Structure formats: structure tokens, C-alpha cells
Length: 577
Image (tube, rainbow, N blue to C red; front, side):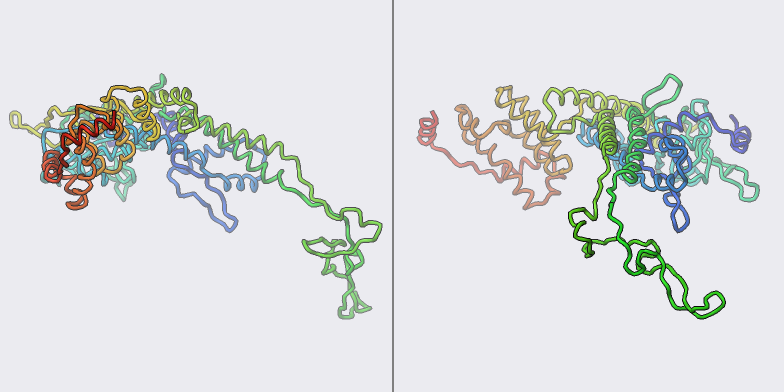
């Protein structure tokens, strides 16, 4: 498309057929975002009517999730909407956190650019206050799971006519609802998030449009365009998920959506049953009002006139409010005849709650099915060993597929575009982007076991007398899991692993070794305390910033072995035999 065709296209409000893709986004994000239906307030106005895309979500609530009772009154309907709570959000957030931790937090990947400036750039807080991996971990992963047909696009933060120095890149999310023309057509056209701009990107240029205030038509923002990227490709990727044969992506979490929808419908029915059918009621004998003698009315003085010649009129009894009988409040005293003393004056009747129990059990089962569909069942210490292994295998495969997609398609292509934007070459007087090879190792394994699981496995390796190199590896995995957020502990443990060949042996095992010198054993036993002393004396920054060689030099300065005489060593041997 040329510029004239694009202007005609966007001003004619032409949009692609994305009904299925938008349906995927709305059905998943309703649960992941914890969207609540809007409802009327008694004092006027609406509550929860300011959520993004609330009209679209409201149609789902009205026509699908809460549509089992089409003949209920408007008041009852509004009450049902007001009682909705986003209980299904928790399991979706839980699996997202598990995926995030398994892929990104355990550091099983390597990304290194030979260009120092570019390498420092992707690891700086230049992407919405995150480094590049932090952006994918904290934002794009969640967006991918809820909107697999949305896009990430790499655009310079400023137009070319305002750019000086190195190009700064925005890695932006484009919701499927903001897409005007898909990249697969050769022209990617979409709204900005606030809908103030429309972007047109092809394989060579980025153009930005703004709306004319007088005509209401979209027009070119600047005659110089926005940025001539000249990449030979559109710098965007579909977020992706499970590919469907109809030509769109469903979410990696899509298996749990139907069950979550059913849970919402059933829980709403449970709330209604609990409100209407589970309250006990009171049955009591009729006790005539002594104020009006059970008449409900009482004579009271009034001015004499044609209607009241005697100067009295009948009004509702102020005691019983015209009901003829009085109600008994707790702690009230009332008298009954002697022959009625053995009869209960008040009975509290509890209704049959079997239907309530059924709905409670049904919703509990549905919630468990949500956990099963999201591979969350294994997060339970009480599970049997065999069952836990099976569930962990399912979760491992689930995370592996997501990780491969993120690293192979999204992160790799993003780094390629960043390199090309920031590095140019001149060919026959023409400035062109260039790229180069870089180190990119995606995660090959994922530690989805709990710290306690890993600790138990370490104990089992000792019992089974497995080779020490296996125990060393497992101890490293335990430290990574248990102290994943403690950079100092991570650095100290790596130093110990590299410098102490005996660290994986227990004290009892070291005492039985006849071929190891006492100095080696003393070094192994005192090394953790020496590192702690360095941390206290020189600060955590010394541990974090110094190289392993510099730390080793300091450790050697502080380590003072205690000499052991041959006779005492011999005596120790005799005692320990």
C-alpha cells in the first residue's frame, strides 16, 4: 500500500475480521485481569463501569456467564451482578508466576552481545523501567498468555528528525482490538494504546498519523514520516500461543477457560441459593396485643366535627402497628396459661440445605478442575510420589513449550531488531541497518520442584551413595531455588562450588577420609565463615562487584590453617577406627 491508499483505508474505518481473535482475548483476560461486571447502585450511578473494554466484558456476563435465569427480575439480576467476585483470577495468576519463575528467575539462559554499548543497553532499565528480560518476564509474558493474537512491535522512541545519538527502542504491546491491518498483509496498521495515533509500518518505514481536530479525519503527523528503519521486514511479532487450524492462536491457558466459565455460572447459582433457601425462619404462637385487645386499632381523642361527633377516632395500634398480634424479641417476658406451659411458644425451623451442599460441592469440584487444567495440582506436599512425578512431567512440558516460543520467536527477534536499529553501515552512499552474531542460549531445563523436594533428593543421594558430582549439581540447584532473590548468597555459593572440592561432603564423611589433608578439611569447613566475615567487614558490594580471583586472594589472606602434628593425627586415626 502507498500513503494515499493507507489514508483512504484508515479514514474509511476498515477493520480486519478479528472476531475469533478478540474472543480469545476477552475470554482469557476476563479471568486473568479479574474483571467485574458493572451494576447499578441504589443511590444512582454505576460501579465498575470504568474498566477497559467493560462493554465487551459485560456482554459476556449478560449473555453467557450469568444467563441461566433469563426470567429473573431486574432487581435480582442486578443483585447477582453485584455479588460477583473474581475468584478464578487466583489460579491463573498462580500459574503465570510459576511459569515466570521457571523460565526467567533461575537464570538458565545466556544472552551476550559482543558490542559493549548494545549489551549494556539491553541490560539497562531502558524498557519501561525494566531491562529487556525483565520486560518479558514482568509484562510481555502475561500479555502473551491473555492475548496470543496481539503483537509486540519494536519502534524507536522518537522520530528520526528528533533522534540524536544512539537510537532508543520502545518494545510496545499492540492489543488485538487495536489492530487495523495485520502484518501478514505486508502492512501493519494499528492504533496506539490511547488511540491518539495510528501507526503504519511496512518493511522499510514507520509512518504516524494524527486526527485532524476540525475534519475528524486522520492525517500525516509529519511530512518526513516517523522513521525509515530499512530493515527489510516488519519489526513486529505476534505474541502467539497454541495454533488453531482456523488460522488464529488460542492461549496456552485456554484449556482452563471453559471450566473457569462454568465455575462462574455455578458459583453465582450457589450465591442465589444461599441467599434464598438457607435461612432458618421462626414460627411462634399468636399473642394478642394487650394494648388493643387484638383489634389492631385503638380509639384516640380528636377534634369534634361532622365525621367525629364524639371526639374520638380509630387509628392503628401503636403497639402492634395494626397487626393485632405482638412479636417476641429475645429476652422478652410474656405470660401463657397454665395449660399451655408445655407447648413451645417459639420454634426455629431450619430448612433442608441439601441443595446448598450440592452447589458447594459442585463449585469445589469445578475449582479443582481449573487447577488440573492449569497443571497446578502438583503444588501440594501431600501428593503421593508417583502422582507428583506425573504432574511435574506435565508441568515441565507445558513450561518448556512456552519457553521455547518466547525465546525463539519473541526475545531473539527483538534483540535482532534492536541491534539493527542501533548499528548502521553506508553502502554506495546509502545508510543501511546492519546486524551481527551474538550469544543466545535459551533455557534447556526448568527447576519446578520446591526447595524441600530438592533437599529431600539431596538426602537420598547420600543414602544411595551416588557419585559426588551428582550431589554437587543438586546442591547448586537447591541454592538457586532457595536463595533465588539473594544475589550475595548466590555469588558466595558459586565461589564455594568453584573453590572447595569438598563442600558437598558432610562432616561425618570428611572425618572418615584418610587421604585428605587436615588443611583441606579446615579450608572446607571455615570457607563459609570467611566469606561471611568478608561480607561484614567489606560490605556486600565487595562480594557482588569483585571477581572470583579477587575474592580468592582475600580468602587466602584470612585463612589460617591450624597445624596438626603427626602424633595427634595418628591418635585421631586410632580413635576413629
